[in-house]
Image (tube, rainbow, N blue to C red):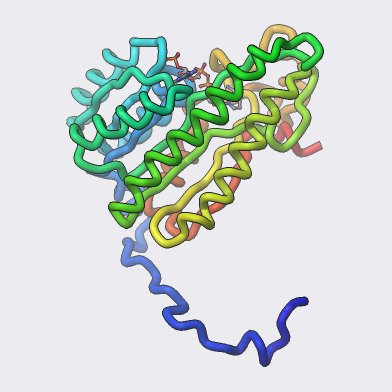
Length: 277
Ligand SMILES: NC(=O)c1ccc[n+]([C@@H]2O[C@H](COP(=O)([O-])OP(=O)(O)OC[C@H]3O[C@@H](n4cnc5c(N)ncnc54)[C@H](OP(=O)(O)O)[C@@H]3O)[C@@H](O)[C@H]2O)c1
């Protein structure tokens, strides 16, 4: 039963909490990322590289994690030179918790702290469950679910020790809707898991870290709309097209920076209006 005025008039010690002493100028809030350390998984291209570039453009130091695409190594060097920041590339299969744990230790020894962790790596084997092997199901779970859980667990330990941190999870509109025309229940399910997991962490970590979720619609990357789904992607999106990765940079920047100090547990759709109808 909900409380009446008399029951909820009890003063809670320590509340209200203090407002953070961040600048009121919004550009200064975004610039707060200067010198911070940001880890991005799936950073070699697509959304993850765009996020890495966004962080570098505001002079954050960036640890780019990749799995198979070692273009991340050269891209890390290019970002460091272009923006006079520190970067490094790490080869990490996020489905292997030991590699995740070891790589977080390596980032700490190279950069000394982790301010923001962007758990962005993901994959899809887009098939109906009746056409999918259990091995294919397990593969998607191992990257999209186990990978995000391991990254969150080991980054969260660092955040707790530091007394501050910021986790951003790349989920999908497929966590919100049963996407069409491709039947891909396992991929949809993995994204629904990480969305609710992220919201739950926002509460669990309330004393020391913020946690938010980005739910993209179709973006023109390797994981964007397949040839058989592209016409439906254009029709469903109110804006009539897929997103360009430059159009997602600002959202991650907002969530990573001091512009979003009152934002936690949010799940932000960025889908050109795809999920409106
Ligand atoms: N594009 C879209 O329309 C769309 C829509 C909604 C959500 N998303 C989500 O956005 C995220 C990024 O995807 P994207 O669109 O940018 O496609 P992408 O360029 O194919 O990026 C996927 C990334 O995940 C990494 N990855 C895959 N398996 C991995 C593993 N076992 N360990 C570590 N990294 C692994 C890949 O690394 P390597 O290349 O180095 O192997 C790749 O960089 C994914 O989580 C995806 O589900 C994308």
